Image 1 (tube, rainbow, N blue to C red):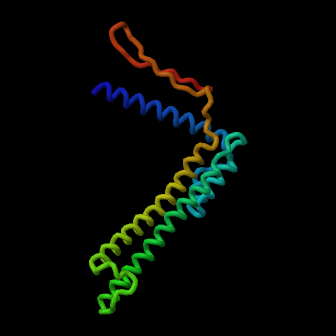
Image 2 (image 1 turned 30 degrees about the vertical axis):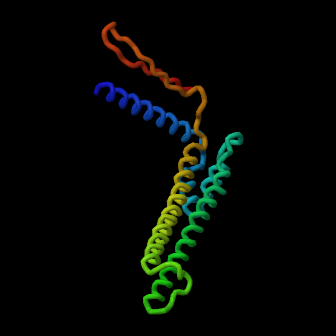
Length: 183
């Protein structure tokens, strides 16, 4: 139990120190760039936050623009499947309603009424999952813009480091030594 608690404290402490240090570096170096703006831009126009982050990045680190075609491909594919499944669902429903009124089978003569209901439910479920996919792609777009906005000027140089080493105190108790290196 003590080992688990020690590991938890170690991880929490290292994350809090790294987060505080990175926030200080970002707040000192970034002028006018906001991750909130990047999220807002991506929420209004998918991909706009990635372009905003790409423009704000230093010259050697520009890499956010290539995500825009992936965002639109994801939205396009999921939208295609949502529309296709909705169209088929409506066709199955229209055929079933036509048969219920006593008309002979028109388009789907190879299926009986129960099969049409099963196909209708299947296409409705697939349409709903495609709509959920559209929402997930859209949400990932906004989250990615926010995360990328945080890392526009993130310092990953060798000057920032954390060294953890086991230590022996008074020849009878063990401990952990932390050594932080800042600029």
